[in-house]
Image 1 (spheres, rainbow, N blue to C red):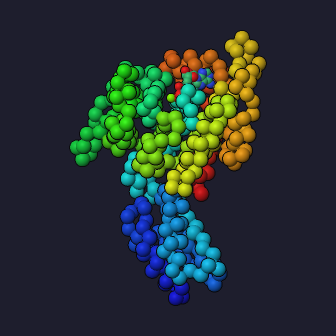
Image 2 (cartoon, protein in one colour):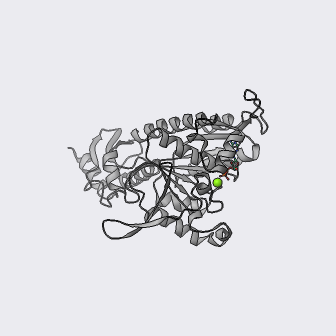
Image 3 (tube, helix red, strand yellow):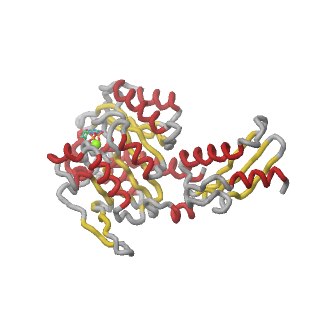
Length: 355
Ligand SMILES: Nc1ncnc2c1ncn2[C@@H]1O[C@H](COP(=O)(O)OP(=O)(O)O)[C@@H](O)[C@H]1O
Ligand SMILES: [Mg+2]
């Protein structure tokens, strides 16, 4: 160890490890420091690989070293992800491996349809899945998963604390603001009360062990999004749009919000819903009634994957209204679009976690 080395380690005593609340050195996060004349490299173990967490630590380190780091010296922080430790240390929803949000700029583009069918398709692939309907403006998960008239009960945890017990159907756990506020009450629930209820559905609910928790976010970019992102480390977000110009413009704003420096949630990709219309009696015909190619263009421009193109077909609307997601219904020709989407999401989430 040379002097420079010691100086760097000293400085890292002043940088907080977000997972434990100790400093990076005491928390045992610093695995290696390599300081040459022009290049300082630090290997850090982290438990939460979310981009916003990495960026924050990087910025904190850079600041801590700035008093003695010459401008000519390049600083590099290598993150070693220890996902085992991660599950143990996450304070919010420690049993949930991945939280994936489904967002859209505009309402009515099929965000809930995509969220519910993605959850269903992941479950079919063998994952343990939950869905949190955070759309306080139009909770539709209970209708789409046939639990509209069910009410969540309470369970006690080991410490005797009362927790909300998610409702379960088709092997999917779910909570929705719709379970607590009737359709007619929804308006009164907006604002702080809805935010509080949402927080409770995350911090005071018995979600148990899940591979994926899917969040059906409200449309747009608002306070609810920001408070959710602060409360829960998201593994990533999927943005849903139709091919229409107005929807694409709003999707672009959505992506920009998640990529803001203080948010930094990885955008897993874009889903183009209602990409074309196919009538039941002409299953080979495609009519691009909302325009063609817009989502692919936007995805390329933003350098994010186009995860799926889902057609506008009667069977998807009907399955939503009937409470049996298309993804769970082999007789529904649209099921394949959602299983393909689920496979892509699993692959990308896996790659991100390994980074
Ligand atoms: N690909 C599709 N084909 C047919 N109907 C669809 C499709 N996607 C969504 N819908 C229907 O459009 C309406 C709005 O979809 P929804 O998922 O509730 O949108 P959002 O959550 O964005 O407001 C619903 O009635 C739904 O069944
Ligand atoms: Mg919705």
